[in-house]
Length: 394
Ligand code: PLP
Ligand code: TYF
Image (cartoon, rainbow, N blue to C red; front, side, top):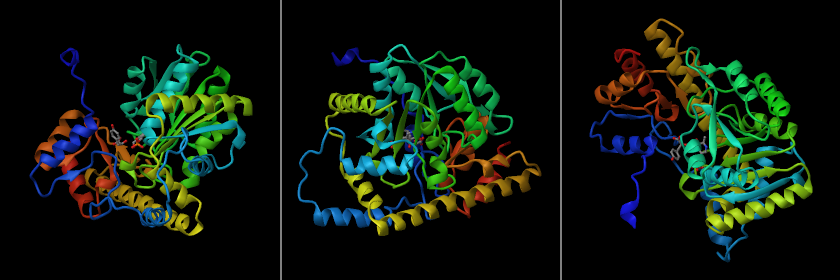
């Protein structure tokens, strides 16, 4: 039987991680996978996470199963963190999932149960796992224009035009903040225009929010998600705690389904629980319990927010430094968008040959589409990267 299997394509981001590890050069720079690194290149366990783990270790008396939706305290705390009261709690169904990826997967599965013929619209470009999960579940995706490579910003007119071509009941996947892979985001006024098209065309938003707190702050980064959820009769929201709590390997995420009313939410909740059961029964608990412990304790929460704020401002400062360095070396403002982008990533707009030269000749590892992880830099390596980009012809 097993010999009948077909080879599957590798995840390019994860393959790059392996190539970086295998490179013997001491001065290599890893700008690949989206993991936060401090200026020393470490991905530390956050202080509040350590403290919450200690508390759980001291106080937890059982590891018996939770419910199919996971720990209710986690779901409540995350609904509040992401939605901030933008919709009535009784309209929100929620389940814990293994990471934000699990939430996206369960969201697509839920769409499949409710609307198997719906097309799921994805930004061009988007996180490669989006199309691959949709395809794997036998659903159809289409692309809307998003990134404007001439400006490094969003092609809003193209995006709106494409979304106007969607059929009623289609699903539109939107990055809540800190777009991956481009770093380019809609302004508040542009979000209003997107919402107007969603309403006009009867489209269902599916918001993937994996970087809340990495862009402009916890509330600012959730503002668009709250606005969309507040304006639309129905929305799906897939959120990840991997980055903002630094608990990548704990696999902690949540899927929220916001229904028209309480009855709709009860039906959706039953279906979300059912989907969890079909896929893995109970979602992982440790990371979720850490998150709930932090969010429901004033002191831990304040410490977490302070550390997250340090992470955010470190990345912003690196953005400014890199944009400044490139402006100086190229005597132009063509990389000014790096300082405008938000989150971990920026797409530099370099052709594949230059990306390849940077890897071969300079030991700089970025994703093939020229996405860089800003957190892979520090104040010493920014000038080296800028020099390498210009030397490679960028
Ligand atoms: N969605 C986007 C756009 C991402 O970049 C990521 C990766 O971090 C995720 C979802 C989910 O990540 P995880 O499954 O590690 O929580
Ligand atoms: O885009 C990234 O780098 C992060 C991490 O299959 C990631 O989202 C990359 C690939 C993957 C899962 C997570």
